[in-house]
Length: 159
Image (cartoon, rainbow, N blue to C red; front, side, top):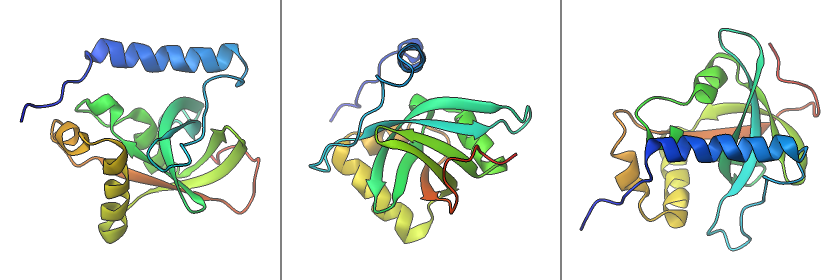
């Protein structure tokens, strides 16, 4: 069986840059969507974290799935070798904001561990049959990130 092909790195980065630009230009009317009801697709959300060095808000578009009240994504950086900046920021400042198709959500992010990670990884594998092959390209394990609702809503990430 041949290894699945990824688009060139420049294409992946350009796509996400353009996606974020469309979101900004349309003031959020275009660019976010819910996961498919069948459970076989992912949604797109805008994540705002606090920069670990700058202390400034940083936003990025991420793919996600729902897991009960939680939102789950992978810190995979387009399957590149380095960790995504948003994940490094989140480890320093776990409180963040998610813009979802149906509104904003104040969340706290953390890495899934053990059985929970295995279950959520399996869920992503149902969406992307090449998940394990893509992950094998990275020098370290890809974090499965769980965003849990915070008690207060609508507040900016804490600094």
